[in-house]
Image (cartoon, rainbow, N blue to C red; front, side, top):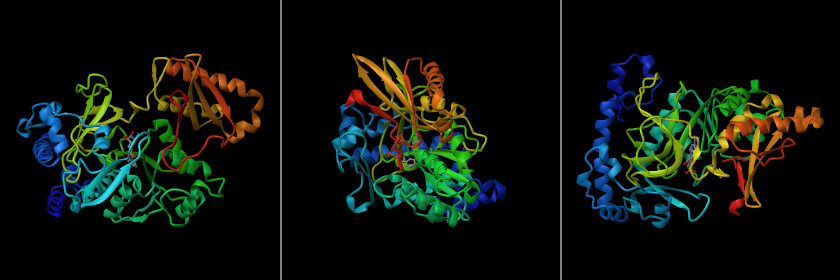
Length: 453
Ligand code: DLL
């Protein structure tokens, strides 16, 4: 956005209205305006990729396609997909559409198997990323009076630098805390008066749990908002974090290949995550046929970047599972909303033929807090005599643990009943003592699948 656009929009809007948008011009565009912008940018992106990225040109040629075939977003489904495998096959720089001399930032993500996937950003790409992150922060209610503590890792992972760049752009005071040393994080949070927290939801929960242990109370903190993402988390977990840290939690989504945190985020109405559609076109495709599905239907999330220079990607299959809606939101934005992720197609466990997402189990646990369960859990999948088994290990709360040793079996049975009725398959539940499950400062490891070892 240029200053001009911002000034023009400010003049035609109530001042108070503009406060909830970082970029009112883009954020309040109508559907027609978004579509017009997307048609133009999609065409330009496809032309660029075709001429500058031989690998993608090859994929288009295999389908007998030319850039001229792509005139509008309705033509998008004709284009070939890209996957993480394509990034690995072209490792490290084979998908760059600009010379390395124009690339000012390199990020990489390790994934669970194989080579790293490498992504290059130009200076303009980093500016766009900061702009999207700034929109997310302002959408949640932050401004230059806020103190933003960034506890995502700084480095090849996009969380730290991504959140930092947006907070810097809105003029907030940024604390580049990175991960680790929870006592020090909480001390900074209290002493520096942090008002905004950026970290993974599991680390937020861990910090909330650790307050008392390190001699802090919730009232010592001045937190107002948190931007949590990088791993799936349930609505119940959101409520837990809000309660423990006394803040409003926002779900921020992104992936290194498309752009780190800030591809999308929920607004204060918390009814889906707004995708910044001037930069990314989202699609949902059927997980088997890969055909596009209508709004409201769950499937695999696919993104096309239409405003990136360094490594634009067409129809990148994320493996993330969500649905979309294009209805206007009460916050005034038309930008499409994706549902909270229900997991990844490749994290999805198939147990005795039934699809199971860790987030389903998490929801049950969070509804079982009254029984002494905590949200710290691990799912252990194994195969015994050719039959899949699933054990959910759940930490008991400190009080329940000391009071309840005799009644443990009863609690295990109750939770097992709840998990089984949600998943429709049998499982075992094992209650373990407080702090028995390893904590994470980054993405939590929820599943140990021994069948794959
Ligand atoms: O996790 C970028 C990020 C950093 C996003 C900080 C949000 C906050 P990757 O390491 O490439 O990038 O992992 C991307 O993480 O495909 C999803 O499966 C998962 N993920 C990211 N955000 C969310 C979220 C960063 N809000 C992968 N909810 C994605 C659920 C998420 N899963």
